[in-house]
Amino acid sequence: MNHRIRIYQQGAPDVLHHEIFTLEKPAPGQVLIRHQAIGVNFVDTMFRDGTFNVQMPFSMGVEAAGIVEEVGLQVQHLKVGDRVGYFFASGAYSNCRVIDASALIKLPDDISSAQAAGLLSKGLTAWVLVRQVHSLREGSTVVVQGASGGVGSLLARWAKSIGASVIATVGSANKARIVQGWGLDHVLRSDEPELAGAIRAVNGGNGVDVVYDLVGRQTLDASIGALRDGGDLVHVGNASGAAVADMTLLAARGIRYLQPSTPQYINSQNQDMAASELFERFREGALGQLEISRYRLEEAALAHRAIAARKHTGSILLIP
Image 1: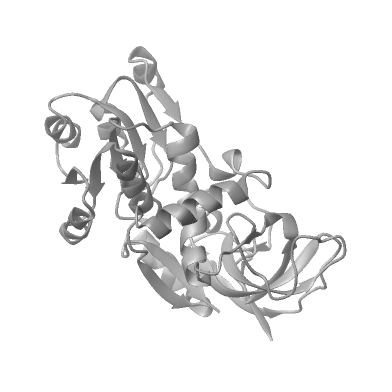
Image 2 (image 1 turned 45 degrees about the vertical axis):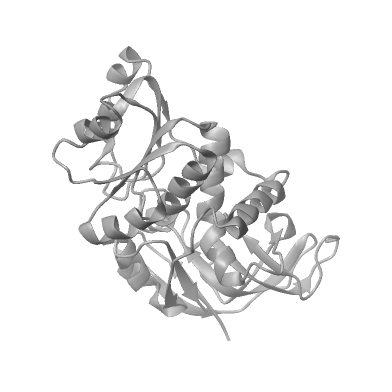
């Protein structure tokens, strides 16, 4: 039997519906893959809770890795038995699926399905942030708000490996103890009452070049206050709730405000190149150990509650 998680209405994690379904045959240009690991991302909660409008019923999940079991006509670059992953194609919360072959990235032998499902979406987002959105250079000063999360943990260490001075913020003392072991320059609590001032203090009283804000409501004002005039505010997440920047203030200070999404920058033409660099940085150890928390596929609602509670560091997987 084939299993998947769908929603028929948007709302709290309880709307995630586990069901049995019949799988179609792959059409030309498609393949059938059997998932071995499924990534759970913050964006999944936004599809589920109504932040994004979607057509119902909606098949949950955007990231997974597994094995090709059937190949449709006109697919030349994949064969049965190939290990593959993908990072933004709805319908990942399932034990198997049919998907366009162009969405798939062939996995190297030394990258497991669990590693791929924990790395691709978050790691390619980090690649976009340091290579495309703000071309990070050695000597840059960087703040990562929400550095203990899936994207933040990769982003902070990737920035450090480039030679940037990295100030990380986290939401609890326990997370601070974990992040302090990564070799970053400074680790601060995001609930610091004068966070912008604390960031400037550890940066010699100066504003920083770029803030990557993955937290949103709790930290966005501090992110603006921590930036130098003419710096970049890269707003890529709302773990604490949605936030709206004061555009008049940003314009007056010459701050560039960006709200990028990974699919804006990565497509079928460059995804293999980007993934190759991601896997190479992972092999080198530049991104640290991949921390993974696992749930069964039918426990998707528990995984979503864990995200809301900011319970885990690293990546969360569903295992079919």
